[in-house]
Image 1: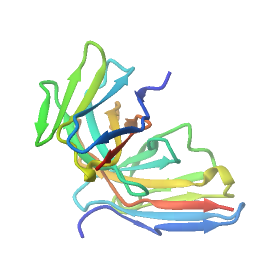
Image 2: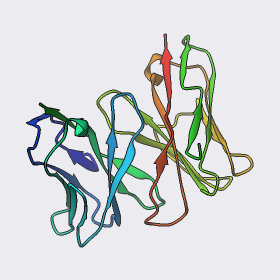
Image 3: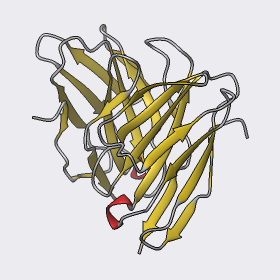
Length: 109
Length: 114
C-alpha cells in the first residue's frame, strides 16, 4: 500500500461546479499536510497547507480528518484556470514530503 | 527572481554518460531537497540537506547517484552511467527548518536518456 493515495481522475467538470478531492495517508504519526497544484510540465506550486481545524482560501477549502487519516480539498465555483493536477503531500519525519500520485482536474466551458 | 532555480532546464544524454544538475535554493532556506518525478506520478523523495549535511537518502538513490551541498548554499546532483530508466524530471525544493514550513520547488531539470 502506498503511503499517500489519491484518486488519479481525471475529473472533468463544467465551469462553476464544485469539486472535491480526497487523499488518504497511512502514517498516523504524520504532522503536516499540504496541497500543491501542478500545471502540465511545470513544477508543483504550494496551494495551501492543511490545518487540523480546516482552512479556507477564497474558493478553496482544505480539511483534515486525523481519525480516518485523510485530507480533502474542495474547489467551489471552478474556473477554467483551475485545470491542473492537484497533489496532496504529507510531511514525513525529517521533513521530506511524501506525495500522492496527483488528481487531474479538467474544467470545461 | 528570488525563487528556487535549477540548471539546466533540459538535458538530453546518451546512455552511459554522466550528468550533473545544479539547484540554487531560496537564499535564507537552510533545507534543500531533491525529488524525481515521472509521468503520471507525484514527486518521489531522493535526498535532503540541512545546511551542508546530507541527512537522508532514499533507497531510490542508487550508487550511481550522488548529491552535494558543499557550502550549504547551492547543491548538485550527479548521475553516473545514466540509464534509460533515469529519464524523469528532477526537482529541487527548499524550505526553512521546522515542521510546518512549506517547501518551494524549482522549475526542474527534465532529463532524457536515449
